[in-house]
Image 1 (cartoon, rainbow, N blue to C red):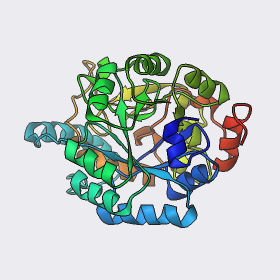
Image 2 (cartoon, rainbow, N blue to C red):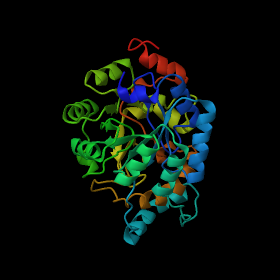
Image 3 (cartoon, rainbow, N blue to C red):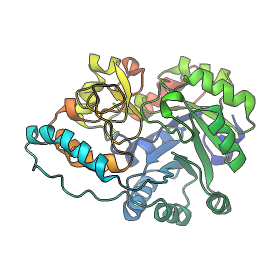
Image 4 (spheres, one colour):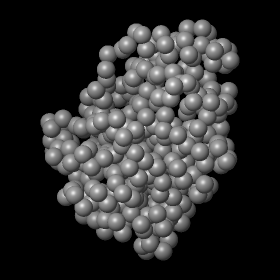
Length: 350
């Protein structure tokens, strides 16, 4: 048992990955934490009021520790040319979904500083973060509040930057992981190192405890990354079919279909590279010659928000963002507590 987990009061080397935008939920995080792992809530899109409600809802279900995950953002200014280009590309799809010609103005993403104020006030045991680095004064404030910090690295260089910052642990996000890539130094398409390789690089070159994430779906996968020196495995896709998860029904069906065998890293939905099931929408925007260049995050995400919401409401998986890791073929449809037991069976005594 690592000192990091022991200090948190977590019994098992298992973390449920944060999955902002629907798949995770207070019920899922609480169930994983109750089973002895560390549940997580992806709260990047929540207003301060919604974040407070999510923390309260999770605490109402369990006294066990859980993690809050936020995006550390440095948003570029809006690009009018990119906005016009993307809007024109979306127009045929909007007509297909019977939306008005002009997108409704999207609400801006909540500011990180306001979200962090809630975290510092309510003091969840862990704050994990991605897309960048905390400021030194923010890290100091979290440490003074007794909140452990976990940064996300997709390369050794990012791990070194997080170590210099002084985080308590680092999540090694391998290329197999579903959802947004956490890359903050360089091109995300140059930061697609596999989970086993990245974990071993960070373990051997850094002094900070390492969590392994990406493509881990069973006991053998957990055992492998622990053998490589990680102190815990983080699993996201593995929990997406749990009844406690907030995964959309059409997304659940896609995860159980042959379509989930083919995933791509795409900027089509948000403007940031993310791994999901290949579909019609993921092929619209990207880097190949026949594709349209997306706007940057979060402008692109705002431009596609109404269309993505309509696609989900109309059960159109061909136009939905279907985040998924590379190993969905091994998914099991079990309650979270049972799944934790199955994942840990034979690894440690529960």
